[in-house]
Length: 145
Image (tube, rainbow, N blue to C red; front, side, top):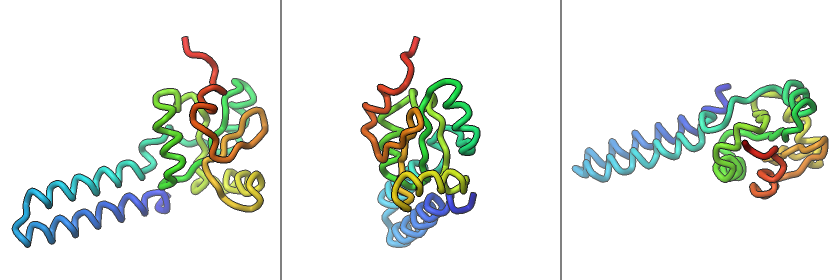
């Protein structure tokens, strides 16, 4: 759990340090702007922007029932964020597994990627796809009503 929050907390602490330096130099406007920039970076890299993660076994069970893809991801991954943002609201239709919280998920990713923990790895119908195009992933989802 702490590993998922390490990068966002680092951004917050750096933002506070930089803003404090700017305030002591008399640049209140720059301090506010920089602090906001660091807070945005912290928010984007936090696990809060992703749908609630489930464990691998549950994701595979749900995927077998509804046919929706399973996405293996980790916080701080720019490619995972790209996939999440490009999918928009439809991202909630996928089954998300945080490999930093689920050792079975990390093992599944390593098995699919020659021992590397390359994410996002999207599993559709039992076949893994490493860092697929978000438009392709959107095409794997059932149509919305």
